[in-house]
Amino acid sequence: MLIDAFSRRFTYLRLSITESCNFRCSYCLPNGTDCESRSGELNLVEIRRLVTAFARLGTKKVRITGGEPSLRKDLTEIIAICKSVPGIEKVAITTNGYRLARDAQAWFDAGLDAVNVSIDSLDADTFHLVTGQDKLADILAGVAKARAVGIKQVKINTVLLRQHNALALPDFLDFIKSQDISLRFIELMRTNDNTQYYKNQHLSGESIQQKLLATGWQLKAKSSTDGPALEYYHGDYQGRIGLIMPYSKDFCADCNRLRVSSQAGLYLCLFTEQQQDLRQLLQNDDALPLMQFLQQAVLGKEATHYLHQDFSGGTRHLAQIGG
Image: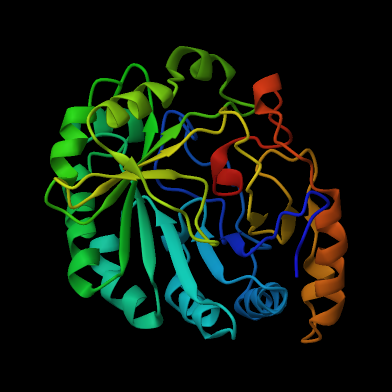
């Protein structure tokens, strides 16, 4: 098993397959991607070996991230590889939705269980302003297609932004009232290149949490492979609301996830100062050396991310490792 010094067990791998992204989100890549070359990205054989080692250590869920993972032409094959590894029960993807309408069926056929789509506003003009892409209608069509083809879980990720969606809760509630979708509000996190933007735009999720509790929403119990969201449900709504509040007390206490970058770097935390190179351990099918390395590495995981102390580690921006 993968268990750290604080008795946290890691059953969830977030696997980035590229740093490239075709959106220019104001909180992440306002000037476009800074990924100059895609050389060195994990190949299919390395991905299979990596996921196999994690699975043998108790990992049950793999989330494929980026950058924008659909920019990899072999994404469908990657999904199929992850789902075929013994022990992996759930394969998910986080995407900007750019190719969701086109590829949802292929991804589902390959074994995709869940998709998270980044939609920071349901207003087309605001969406364009935040992302640099006038594609809201296309992405909402992709969400509908994902549900129609049978993908089990469809979620929407919305980064809370003081000047863009702080007052939009009623719109989002209307959106999920008759749709079986989980909408998750994510607090903006400070990274090494967005300090001033963070100061201008950060909005605590506590205000939304209090509004939900005051109007009859109830907290849903988590499963062992769920991410960090606190998810709320209401009898009058088919959908659910999740809150990811990394600055809240004890946010890291039940951490269950590790991250590997597209360049084969192990990140014990999204905001770690250093990564650990796994490339050499992925050059043959013997999983044992990698398993032993991972078991030793997790013992060095810190108790918390220290975001509340204005520490953002070596993370340049969220596209670097997929959030």
